[in-house]
Length: 277
Image (cartoon, helix red, strand yellow):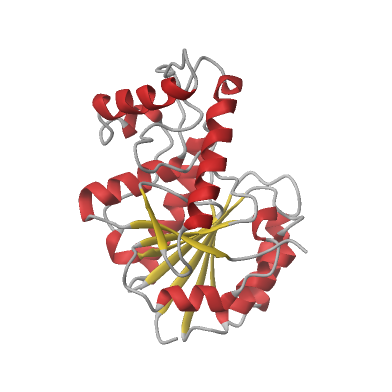
């Protein structure tokens, strides 16, 4: 395909999975005339750094490798947001003119072989701006917002354990909804990631990743949170929103800001990109 793409990965102690992820990236690279890989890594205590440098040297395409120093926030979502933003800095300011960028988790969820034909099929369509995919076990509920659910799934009660019922409800509900839509249809949502997503880059120039809960309040109103609370209270009585959390999923802010700034269309495909044997 004659388009410019960049595959972005953030790495911390992923050595166990990297060889299989490199295989998938090699497979994907064969489909594009201009293929770049952007990798940001930090604070690795395994041999990830060595594997990354060997991969860069052996690749037939451009691999941009950045060691992100001083990424030591005590909050995981802030550290991840910093790394993802460093990836996007390379995409926007070093490579430039990227048509589509991929954000890819470098762990077990991407260690099985990708069906590249599915990716190519959707790259030819114009009815989405951010596209993630279904899985046999849809797992990434924290990055998910849709319909009248406008609060993150780990933000209820006073402990993460208090969110268990809501997480299970959302996992079952999104699985049911994706199973019910027609083949090749897309599910409209506010946010979704699920370990692998494709972005139409020109719709995301003026957004960024942010893992602090206080900042997403700029884009989700108190009324929307109240509607979400009322929805879940009918299913799980005595549900409360945890207003003291510091973290939230960094993907939520990235997607919601792109909707607010650029009318970005966030979608989920029914297709399953990779399957575990």
